[in-house]
Image (tube, rainbow, N blue to C red; front, side):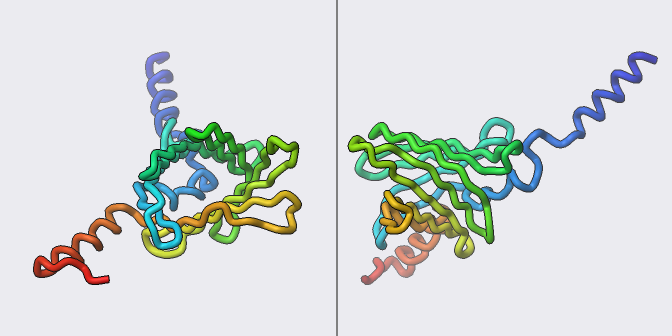
Length: 178
């Protein structure tokens, strides 16, 4: 009898949802994939966004052709109802951001203290704009009145971007004309 109770409890345990299966944990899933990132119409870098730690965390791995590299960990905190991102890169920058998903857009904010003591607020937003595209806008302010764009990037899924390049270059062996 004990064996039956044990086996039934194991079956119940195995079909329960994981700790990160609620809808809030899916808010940032539109960012998953391998991306080509452009800014001002030029290649800015590439980014790979994947789920790790049993689907609880999104890992961002970003790099540019010039050797700049950065990574972020992104998670929904059920206790606060907020999303968190911790970003670090090979320049020594550490950003800790917090925010939420509203109206189809993820918006995270955080602060850094500059060497001169000025506190700078960082706001980064991500929005899916079309099939296989995400827009990222990173802006900063020292007074929350005037904002400066630090980076505006358009993410295109690599498979989608590469197939368009291939279809243009392979047409009758001709190179694209610009």
